[in-house]
Length: 333
Image (tube, rainbow, N blue to C red; front, side, top):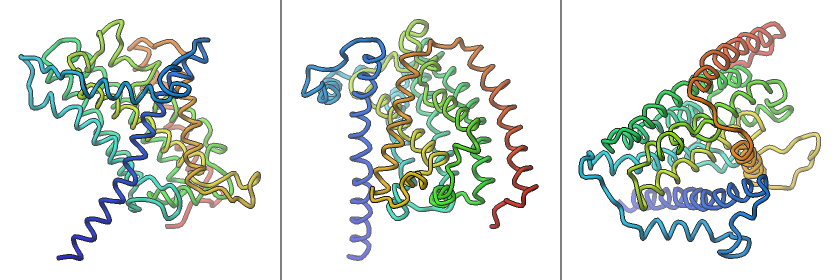
C-alpha cells in the first residue's frame, strides 16, 4: 500500500516539476511576444509593470482571475465550460514525452512522435466545442474554420515527420535526437523544415493564419462569448501549443539537446539549456512572422496547404526514400 502511495507521490512531483516551468514559460513568452512586436513596429511594448515590464503577464493573469465569468443563457453550458479545459489540458499533457536530455524525460515511450502527433491533433476539439457550445454564429464560424485549417495542415506535418522517420528508423524522440549527432536534419531536410515551420503557424492559429479568431471578420472567433479565466485558458492552451511546436521543430530538425558538434566538440553546457535555447529561437521566428507578414485570405490558406505543401512534401518523401535506398543508408530496425 505504502509502495503504491510513494510511486504516485514521486510521479506527481515529476509532473509538477514539468508543468510549473511550462506554465511560467507561457507567461514569459507572452511578454517576449509583445516586446518583439513592439521592437519591429518601433514601439515600447510592456515596460511599466516590473523591470522591463516583466510582471505584465502576471498582472494580466490576475485580471483574468478576478473578472466575472459570463456564460450565455442559450449556450450548452457543460460543453461551454469543458472547451477551454480540454484545450489547456491537451496542450499540457503533450509535454510528457518531450526529452530535455537523454535521461530527463517524463515518459520515454517508443512511440513518442505518434503520441505528440495524436495529442496535437486532438487540440482542435476544444476549439470546436467552444465555438459550437456558444450558440452564436461568429464563434461557430471560427470553430469551423479552425477545424478545416488544423486538419489540413496536420496532413502536411504528418508527411514531413515521415521524412525524419525514414532517416532514423524509430518513433522514439530520444532516438531521433541521437541520430543527429553528426549532422542536424535541418541541413539535408531544409525544405521540410520550412514547410514544418509554416504548417506549425497554421496548426497553432498564429498569424498570418489566425483566421479562426480574425477580429476584423469574426469579432474574436471561437472565443467571442468567453470571458475571465475561461478566456485565459484558451490563451494558455494556444501558447503552450506554440511552445510545443517549437520543441517539436527543435527535436526533429535542430538536434534537440545536442550542441552543434563542429562548433562545440567539448560541450559543457547542459543539454536542457541547448533545447530551451532552440525553442526560444524558433519562438522568436514565430513572433517576427506575426509582426511582419499580413494575414492570408481563407482560400489562400487552403490552397497553400492542399495544392502546394501536400504535393511537395509527398514528393520529398519519395526523394528521401530513394536517396537512402540507393546509397544503402536506410536504418536497420
